[in-house]
Image (tube, rainbow, N blue to C red; front, top):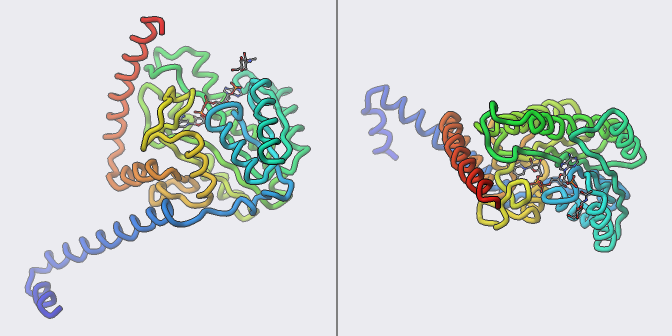
Length: 329
Ligand SMILES: NC(=O)c1ccc[n+]([C@@H]2O[C@H](COP(=O)([O-])OP(=O)(O)OC[C@H]3O[C@@H](n4cnc5c(N)ncnc54)[C@H](OP(=O)(O)O)[C@@H]3O)[C@@H](O)[C@H]2O)c1
Ligand SMILES: *[C@@H]1O[C@H](CO)[C@@H](O)[C@H](O)[C@H]1NC(C)=O
């Protein structure tokens, strides 16, 4: 100790200053890393009971017939919520409803809607279906991406319109239909399913990327509006998950199945995990490997680097997709 003190006092003032600044940085980095690891690997999230599980409350899941949405419906049913399943394909939804009822002994309902061209009448019908229920959880999961990465000048107008109508429009309208009941009952959980493409501006998926950034800002703003009314709004950030949308079938350490991904989301409600210290309030990056990537990107803090990496990645994905298309696969 003495020798350390005499070492410091024998240095010029600017060396001592550097040491002080360095020590503060190291301490802060250590504390933040411990907080992130604690949230990802140790701490439990808010219990779903707080939102009405096993007390007759309903969960509304959009895009429930496949992928991540289907898994939310299954796991929320298992947790003791009745489930309202929303998507286009009635056959798939009815089959899933029967599966959830027999596996979990909860009630299910099906509502068919196409969010890509839903007029006022379609939204009024969905609103009345929601109004009949005590909704404890809303999962704004439905989402559409580009058929393949493309520069904006080459994106078909229909695709562009659908992506905005589904990712932004449906989230706004379904939230607006669900929120009044939650405010009256003073409880609710709203999960908005985002994407790394929302935090890393993604060239050649510019429209999709912009809609996912919307979800991040929208969630943070809405959470502040309703938090004191007992409602939690959470923007769920994720890297790839195996599904039809990602066109990835084989899971890996970085790419979980919908089952593993949804388990991580539902067990970490209210914990930002990998998004802690990222300057994105109301965001959570709960899947462990996604959390580590997100936190590393926060620490590296060089957005331009990730944008340019993503551009390169998407150029090669497009080249491969075009080749596959030409072969008629
Ligand atoms: N998979 C990933 O790697 C990944 C990564 C980041 C973020 N995400 C986000 O996660 C969410 C779910 O993605 P996913 O991978 O599970 O997708 P998915 O497997 O393609 O499932 C999409 C679901 O949405 C429904 N849907 C599609 N278009 C619809 C429309 N026009 N109207 C109503 N329902 C519609 C589909 O059912 P019907 O065909 O029956 O309508 C299906 O149930 C999306 O918001 C996506 O952006 C996914
Ligand atoms: C619904 O999904 C099933 C199974 O994938 C498919 O056979 C059927 O054609 C779909 N129905 C509609 C209306 O898209």
